Image 1 (cartoon, rainbow, N blue to C red):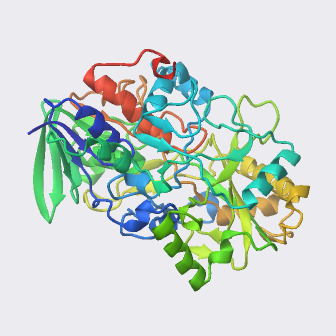
Image 2 (tube, rainbow, N blue to C red):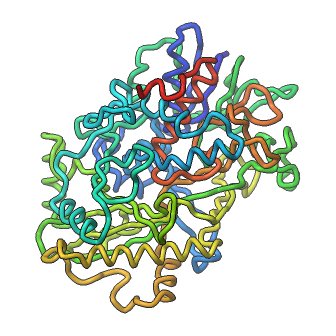
Image 3 (cartoon, one colour):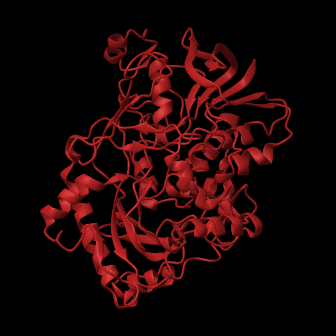
Length: 536
């Protein structure tokens, strides 16, 4: 029997395990369906290209056919390993805009405004470059610049400025997102610094923390309105892991609602239809799914500077060898070295487009290549209006869930993406790209009308890996958890991961998910940081 059982050793679960087990009198179990993070490509920044497309540490999910995207099923990679998606992601450290969090608080989630969550961002962080009221020093999560960016990064930033965007040195102060610049990343000594490395690594040797891998949770066990443990499958056998205080779901925006539904917690009519006994009728479980949908703009590069120059067999071998022996070179790059934010139209409180500049012509999550040598700009609307849901195909706990993001259901999302292509072409047309700009490979010069661009987006857009919202916090009837992240109507059960976000933040979701777990750990332990205290 444990005091706390945490389901999911990803971006949130590793943080929770570290913080809760800091009390030696508390017994904590951390359950992970995947294996330990032994795969060497996890720790090599450029190795994400292998991990995202592979199956060894990846749930390898797929969406339902998308009605507004020609019936396509989209590939949804999610981490299945210690560290979760922080072990296979692009490592970009982004928090979003102040208004993202202030809107949560204004919707009834007291305690979640920007000023109230900022101390939890800074508590986690050890920033190698920035030290001010917005950044932390001494936290477990190492945040660094890439010391040797591709030469095209400077070209891109100059082009962005020439296209009318400011140069932004820090995208994480909550205010100044608009502009172009380099991205910071969760790495240390040019190695990926996942939450498993950062937080579990800091907990190594604690006898009161038990990490159980290859243990897939199949059901939350409840008795008399209280969660008492978790049923798991391990080595083909069912086991029960008991919790005397709390069960905490940290499986992410796909796995956490799936487990709730399998446990009889969700919309009663849906559960009845699958033959699952209803424990708690919560109509919002699995609903409110939001994700960032990305689209790319690709140009050839006549100069021999793009990472595509290394795509030959010898180039790949030399890149690997240099990295393993020196931790330098292209192998140390996470790819997403620079980017920025722009507004699709004037008058917005905050920019509604984020973009990433990559020195490569890789497509389809890095699983394919357009051939030749070049670079790309990938865009996505940061505040999409489309909403989808997570559900069950059956009551089989080992089956993949139903994933229906409903991309482009809202016409506004498509129009913002059309504007992103136009903005990207302005950047590539800037003088700074002279000598580095060849022909437009995709969508191509023939794709000039808005309708042609719409067709291109419907045909080629892909997930940007930021699903959230499927166990939304709030106080209304469709909310799944309260602002202290307790599941409505049940004792001893919380959800702590990206699924609790009422709305997706304006950017990558890894850093906000870590923040959520930091704040939740204080809620669970009954402690708390005074507002902005850790930033002062």
